[in-house]
Image 1 (cartoon, helix red, strand yellow):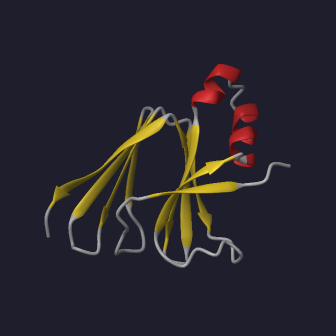
Image 2 (cartoon, rainbow, N blue to C red):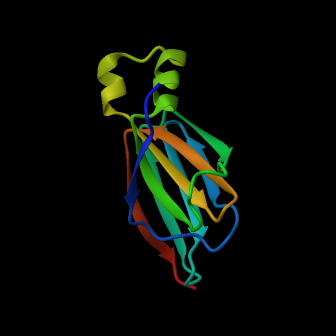
Length: 121
C-alpha cells in the first residue's frame, strides 16, 4: 500500500458547506462563494472521475484546503477500474478539495485552471 502524501495548494477557500459542481464531458467546474462573498470558479480538465468523501477523523485538516495527493491509492484503483494505459496514468493528478471538518471532493484529472473570481460580492 502506498503512503499518501499531500501537497498543499494555495487556493481560495469556501464560505459555504457545498460548492456547485458541474461535470460536462471531461471538464468539471467547481464554483463556490469565498469568505469575501465572491463567486470563485476552478475548472478541472481531463477528468476521469470524482467522488465525495467524508473527511477522515485523523486527517488533521481543520480548515478549508486543496491538496494534490501524491502516491494515491485511489488513483491506482481507478487506473485498474478504467483500464488506463500507463502513459495516461502518469498524466493524471489526484486533487482533494476539503471544506471545513465535514467532507472532501476527490478529483482525478490532468490538471486545473483558476481560481478565477467570476463575480464580486
